[in-house]
Image (cartoon, rainbow over the protein chains, first blue to last red):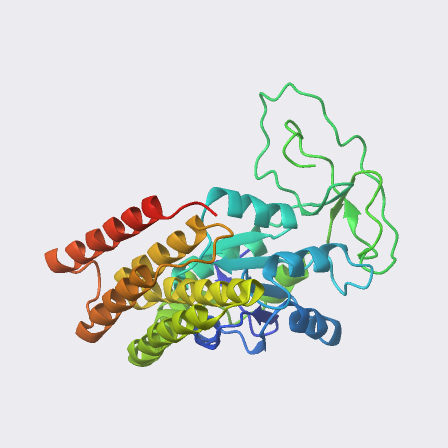
Length: 191
Length: 169
């Protein structure tokens, strides 16, 4: 990829119940060249907007009512009527404790961005989503981007994932998606 | 929710956003961040006013909590108080007011430390409110000086003392 990014054709959805925070994020995104920005107050509004619009990317807060960012992410990833289970979700939150980051990861977020945000930190997460997409995992206890960021060549535990399975083109299954070869090495953290 | 899968599937969805973002006419990292920062600067002019309003709101929410008799109502009031502190924490640093973020963080930590207990100390909340007001009134950017550090130390001590004194509920 060239080192330039054109966001004019992307549609981004922002779910945050704080109007000022949305203003900040929208401002930065407009600076980056985004034109199509949908704003929502909470996860349920965001889910409804996703059903009405082709959303390429979601930025969501954690604490929102009635539906928070955690449950929204789980809904997008696992609901039978989810319009796009694979959509990249960047969670913007003031919760920076390790257990919170792991909770968000286990809900199926793609990237985590600690508030306060800056143009630089937001840019880096966007570029990570675009340039380093991870395979998507559907497992009995987890649905979302592969939680393994890197292979561990020295991992000698059991490979729990077995062989990848071809999905169908049913709702949320993204017809035409190809199957990735499981990353070599450590599978313990992923599923 | 749909039925959970019974076996592990690994899928590589098509990277449509990369295709869209690769169109000509894009911005380099340096250009984009410069433009993003400029937008933040435009908003910075309003930040102090809206942060002051958020801090005032903290005090209103504390009063509302004190008036709540019903336990469920108190839990809701504590959640609102926590949410407001969390909002204050989440914005200060963006506008070079890290002390405001630290004050918000301190109040969040205090409320979290209470667990299910809804007996939030008015003294702790008021001290955080006053500290944030002072920083915003003086428009202290960055980490401030000795006075501001003493202010933060004072907050830490009050939180520590109150947390120790408070019976766990």
